Image 1 (cartoon, rainbow, N blue to C red):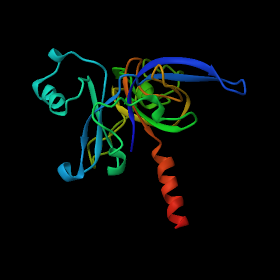
Image 2: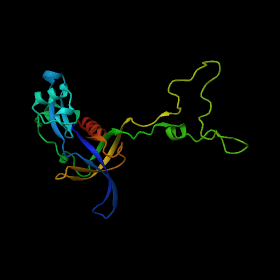
Image 3: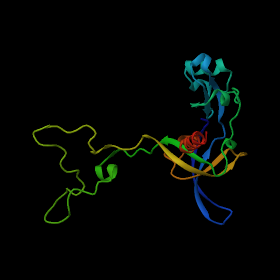
Image 4: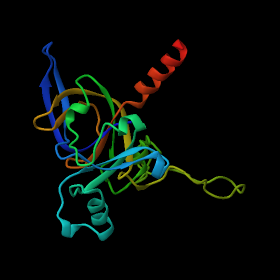
Length: 224
């Protein structure tokens, strides 16, 4: 499956041909290029390694620097492997720039990123709890508490995975079936409608929608 590494720039709005205003997130994929390939003969699977973001040599470790020199590829800050078929991998060459025209206007994509960090949060913010009690009859400082968390003598413990206060955010999340509203190949920008995870300047991965691909495979299988 093909894909791109990008940076979440921020939000703006565009007008469609029908005159409707659409809020979009701007994704920069300008410096994305192929820095390596995996082959079934050598690695037992087929993939393309993409790099994004410029970086100086002194900021790389020796193994990272050796990887780029071995492949004779330009230095990149962020790396990501995308599994592809051997036929698709043959279309790419190391050092080739991968541009925004990999995706087309109106295409559905899946976007993966790291969500915003929200620190230590209570159950109402973290899990959308309603609140333990009403604010009447002398209840003090207990409206936002989780309530009882245990059982009786048996089993006499708190079950693992219980929804409780704790660290919230900084999780890898994939949002599926977002729509590509526009593609600017010259500036290397994708305009995507939908909830892209993460903060501005965060690194994200954009892939074609897996549900669309599976739906096409099932349709082809039924037709055969």
